[in-house]
Image 1 (cartoon, rainbow, N blue to C red):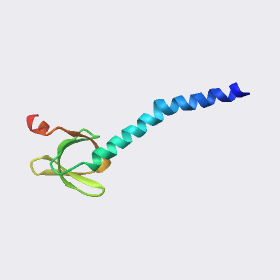
Image 2: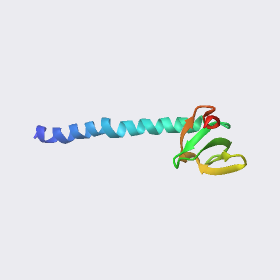
Image 3: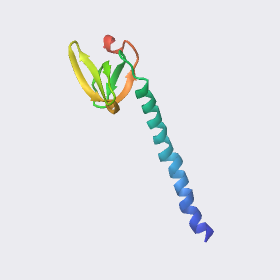
Image 4: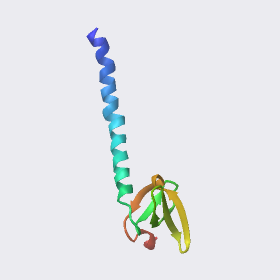
Amino acid sequence: MLSTLLFPIVLIVIMYFLMIRPQMKRQKEHKAMLDKLAKGDEVITNGGIAGSVVAIGEVFVTIEVASGVELRVQRGAIASVLPKGTLKSA
């Protein structure tokens, strides 16, 4: 009886460490990145649009993608923050 219950428990523990825990870690890192977001940061969105942050709101972030062209995207749509000067060199 004990060995019958042991296999599903071990399987759940393995799934936790291989799937659930790394996803939670990535979510924490993404939230920390969004909390540190500041004006002037160069970012790339989930859709592949690169630009620099012009304004930050509670839900939306305004990104300047070209001179005089601004887009409003949700904060969660920002995939990563690029190193300073990346857009100028491209």
